[in-house]
Image (cartoon, rainbow, N blue to C red):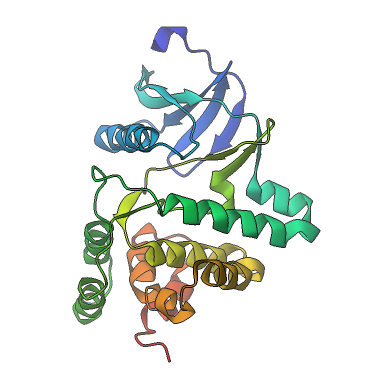
Length: 253
């Protein structure tokens, strides 16, 4: 199939990939040398989520090798992501965040036993971080003592990954961090990302989620040191100081 794919305009770019349109398809083309196993795992997760039902995602088509670069070919969804819509319509921010919360809560009602367990994924990242051993032990103890759930969690649930199609349908993108685990940990990850990138709507999001799901805000906040510690392995500019502050918060009043 690789020979039949023509890359048209670039429509997105990530740290390890570029996304191109190819007619009615989108091609996520990974950087040369990017782990083949990670590409296959991302495609596997997306295929498993397709089977869950009740979650709108672009359909996976193939995994081609193009000029020594692996790609994932899926449906192209014309439209705008929710981050773009919030930027263009700031007065409607609350409406969009309300919808964001509804979508995330619906995802958490799903089950997919083939996904990796969230606690295993978080533990692996904490162990690979450059935190001192005492802090790692503290975070891993907190993680081990947390309630064990098996809900589908996106792992990177941000407005940028919610596509509103031209047909009005909602599509959820980028499932490579998905796992099965605790919904509040997933919420803590979204909240943390918003604190790092869109502080002005972070509290709105958390308040709205806790109110609609009837979740005690402190329950979500208790996950913050763990998810912050796990995110430290990304080593992104401008994030480390805030992440380490969250890691140092052990107990919320």
